[in-house]
Length: 335
Image 1 (cartoon, rainbow, N blue to C red):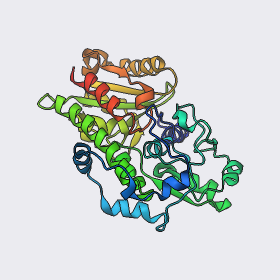
Image 2: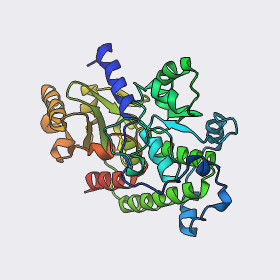
Image 3: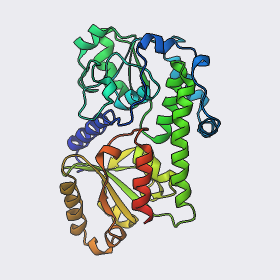
Image 4: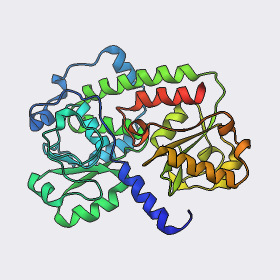
């Protein structure tokens, strides 16, 4: 598993999945994208005091937000194509209608059924994008270099937002709200998420913090995920200890699996975000543990807490899926 070939293949797989999240809670969309983008914030419905207070609790790095907004040079684009489902669903929640969305097996809002598909993030349909004549193509920071290599030669303007962790998703929501003058809708959306997040976190307070290991991949290759991932950041907020960061001192968001280190860390739960057959992925990991003679000694196995997480919830970062992700992780880690 340490060979460069599989490692690069896994990284490509991980990056591809970063833009394939689902959207099952569509918001009201504007009838005309240009009109929506230009709608003054003062004309929007003000958020309730409850959601406004909850939204205010979201910590935003104002310097980073300003840097992200600077990509647009003070202009509110009326014609935007997205190659990230994470960004697409946030825009949908804010009532912003893109003119092109990614081709994906994930479920997008029915409100986007008639919007042209422009290919995947790693295989964008350059001809289709050119036909749409977008002012910007929006993508995730994690694949900026690879996307620019494809789009920059054609002169297509691009901009990028961070969407890997729960905090990055919140930051990008604030930025998109400001960019499209939809601050009130962004506050309402973030306020709703904050309330549900607070409920889940308070339910785990005072309970012993479990040690958790997150694995991502397939039966062919697995990688360890740290706290900068969607699942990892939610587990951190719930008070769990991520062994990748705490014990293994892993600074990479995704790193190759080192079985000896995992056995030494002895996590209380081992949670898989599996591509393909989750049972096959789980069996592969079990077989590797057995080869090291530590099968019966691992706390995760003694606790019955080696599980495959629901890919539709945890497969990719998704602010829309965050409430369900909090609840599912809390049920696994603290019961």
